[in-house]
Image 1: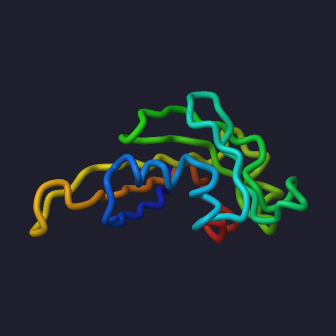
Image 2: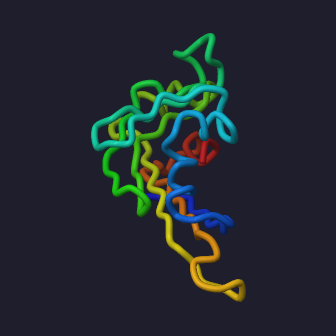
Length: 133
């Protein structure tokens, strides 16, 4: 049975700016990882580097964008960190992340922010996969 990680957060910015936080290298480098090489087109790179001096370790090197609609969603492959790389990073298929961006109206008025929904799927059902998840 596939296990899915789900997270939702509200950002006080428009959908375009929220989308940029997941697709522009300089924005990813400001909140998620020290370095990124992302091409936000289907088939483009989705490579994040937590140790830029050793790009083969603790990275998503080789991961690709699987689908994208700017300002609406982006989907990409994902690799695990070093301690889980022995099984996660050679899996076929790799785990998969989809991030949706939805404008939200609230008490501050129309389009007062963006709800970001993240789904991380294709987790296996063994003890080591559960620990990684």
